[in-house]
Image 1 (cartoon, each protein chain N blue to C red):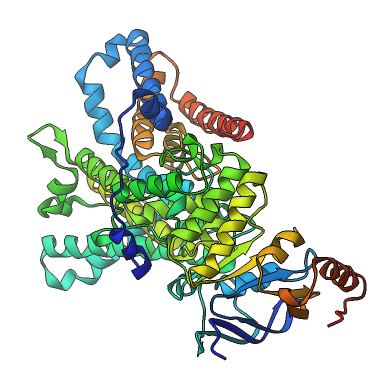
Image 2: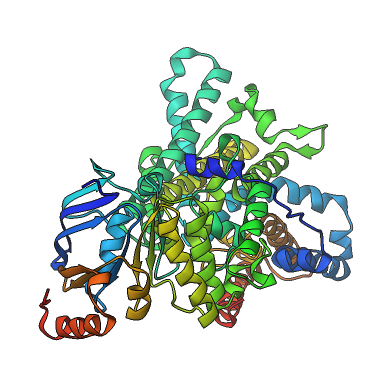
Length: 252
Length: 346
């Protein structure tokens, strides 16, 4: 099968600590994969390998069937990976427009910033997305002054702007109000309809179950099990998660 | 610019029209307006306290002659501090650049062409400064050593290298007056305007453009604000920081050349005494020691306040010993103020 993204036998260790062990992970086209697991299970490490932030200690990464060596953050972006990180990855002393274009500023010749265009695009994006308050629409406002929900919104809107093929959302509902969360969940559903793929991590199993086509459970750096959401009830999923947390084993 | 960013240009009709609002302008530029206020107020105080000094043109000529020697280094140092790094080695780099200059003059003695030799020496000095800057950056980035510690070490190392290579000897540079570089670097434009002041203005303008209008500057601010975020978003934080250290190395060597040319003399402790006023200019100019904020205009005005303080302390009847005390106080107060502002979350 032609996967949009495939990890083959990926392991990652930080010194003595084995964060991921022999991970085989696939993400199909128009597919939303929910990633579940306890704190420290290795979800964020897996995400950071896909986004090029961490290099795997061993194993292979394939995008659209082609093996990619030496994956870096800019390279992953070129391959269409956009990420909303759990830690938001914002620079709070900087303006909104600088945050939206963080790391890939629009430049004219010789690396000069096209500030006018970045301000205008920021204003357009923020006023169209997720119903932000006026303070979060002014491109020159400082991100550090925003509410938790607004900050998370900036991180999400930024990931959507660059027309990604694969959108990775690591705890995106953290800090969002109920209304904003509902909007986000409906947006994640829209990813599939737009012909894109997503990896969705959330502490709220209900949200993950609600939007994912497939759920992958990670425990202690290994994939403990995976299944299609249509083949399991929410109650049964909850029972299995508790079982995994207690025993480290997954009953298929 | 990658292909995805190119896609931005394809997006249609944006209705955003930036509107000038005084309150927003004041809020966005509060640091710079603050330092302008301090600058004007202090000069009014100086004029009232010592009118015999501060109402005469000579004092302003003296500022324009002497302030540039440390102020031009304060420009790239501002970038280093905004990136939440520190460089304490630049005074030694000033001298090391001049050692490279002298070694080149000696090595090219066979050319028997003073203007050419001085030009080659000048290039060698700038190259040496840039390479030392690269080395500083490389040590800090590659080995993850705090820049404060690393550059204390390299400061002593390069001062030692200067002493070893020069055998601790001073000497006249009177021959540089035969070179076109002498009037170009430290001459008097129109018979009165010091060329070094023009170089300071030029370097400050270039620094401003680099920091505020170039991708490099954008990354400097992001790195100082939150280096983890910058890395997650694909900013090459190592390369940007190394470039910043190369820049201060280059400019320090340049400062060493103009300071030596000004007095047509080389001495091995060249640069000693420049550390404090340069650092004080940056901090007085509103650059946060924690990184992420700071301006070139602030540093530029800060440097002239520092220059004026020295003149003012003497003019109001205090001895020159007070100036170090005041510079030190400025640095400590600036750090306290930024710590307070940080805790308030502003």
